[in-house]
Length: 196
Image (cartoon, rainbow, N blue to C red; front, side, top):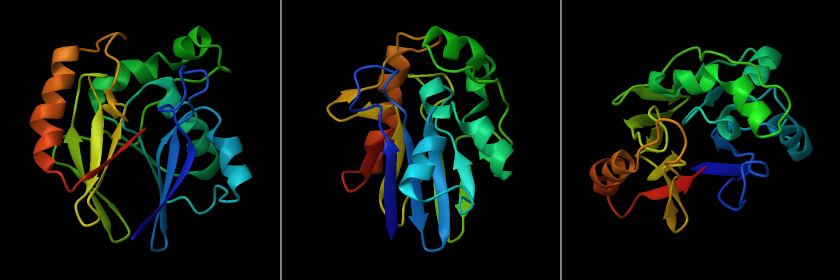
């Protein structure tokens, strides 16, 4: 059984400036983070979870509000960064420009320790996450599915009552709709989608 800790959410915030998504997933003795926007470090300390118990950082896509704290967390803790898909490398390379454009503190570019591809499986303790390539919001967006718990972390592909934006560079509305209809919807009604 999973315990989810939401450190922030862009779904409830009207602007990227307020959205600092990060989700800590606790499964048995394992803790992994899905996305870690700028401000995650402060939220981790406030929550009492701290840095030491994290086992893995997983990224759904390369937008600043989902990856802004990743490089600093890796530097502070030595925890590997996994994902997103390599098609989002240009977003990670543009982090300094993204942070300047949106008024955040300087965020350095980084490369994850490993990229994720369609069909990959990520093991965190006894928890196996299946990787689904779902471009559209960004060209390298991925979704993580735990079949055993019937949970899918969908980043910004879906929101409560809406879908992700496609007006950023290399976003594509038609591709996003195909990702939703051909990849996510066939997973079935019993899957709970957790947006970023």
